[in-house]
Image 1 (cartoon, rainbow, N blue to C red):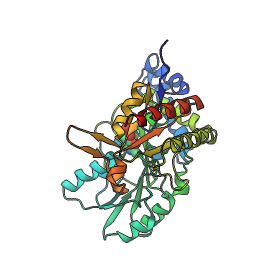
Image 2 (image 1 turned 30 degrees about the vertical axis):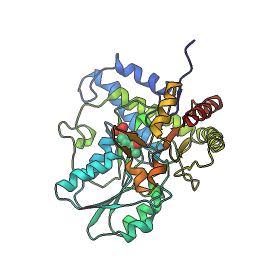
Image 3 (image 1 turned 90 degrees about the vertical axis):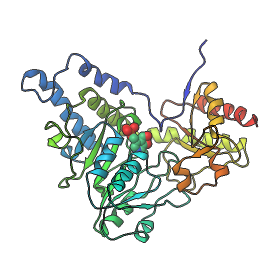
Image 4 (image 1 turned 90 degrees about the horizontal axis):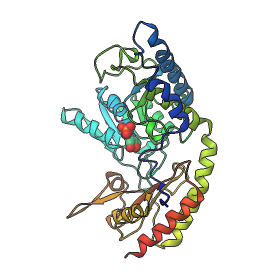
Length: 373
Ligand code: PLP
């Protein structure tokens, strides 16, 4: 009998939901028309793209014309960073989609100010204020961190940026579909999202651009997306993204409650395995549902991930080794986690399909991994 595989790496990607798959199917074959064509083959795809835009907008409290389809979180982040000109302020523990886009701008002469999160893993408005520099025109701080799961106080961060005349972008790739989001209440100007993090397909995402704001174009070509982002629409994926997001948003509290129970069991189980374990990012209650970051001092995270993989359990590591060194992620460095602790940091991210049995199996496998010296 094939052993049951357990997927607990939902911050990396999530399985496609049945709702997304069903919504996509017609547009992968029979409804293949180009939404921009003038003939009747265009009608259903064009209507489906409009309906998807309206659905997504409603899920985050936006207007449909504020939603722009992109190829995913990376493109959305790049568009905002490269689509503006002023001094840029970014947090030091952003995803590389933001950090490397900022570095590319820096190499062309643009000034970038990096701000570090607090040791607990949060970026606070007072840090922005303290490090403020003349000319900052855009602040970019992620809504939830992809390695430690901390959720930042986006509303007050956006207020702090606005008070000094800057625009505010949040990379919400890990948060959309998992915690309630209302762009008007948060007061953000730009918000990036990616479908494959909320049970939609890969290679599709969106950028929210507040009405009235302009970004320089990143992808040039035809007149799609109100003339701002060229390229024939990825109709099936857009439709799948909307179906996945709607389903997740409709059951966001139920999902969070289920994941909360599993997370508590996992935290208890892990705590019983080691007296020395640390849980970066878990100090306060602002962490993504189902997200557990655990550090075992003196252990190799990669070694633990390999033992679990051999048992059919997928998790991920915050540090990776090559033949000479252990490389610690920029996130763990930014929160000043001591090397000895950071080297043994793993990330277990549960999803709605995980069960209590899965959690028991993960704890059992971790026990074996930790017993291996
Ligand atoms: N931003 C964050 C916080 C992420 O976690 C990721 C993916 O892991 C991205 C951006 C990139 O998104 P995509 O994979 O859609 O390009």
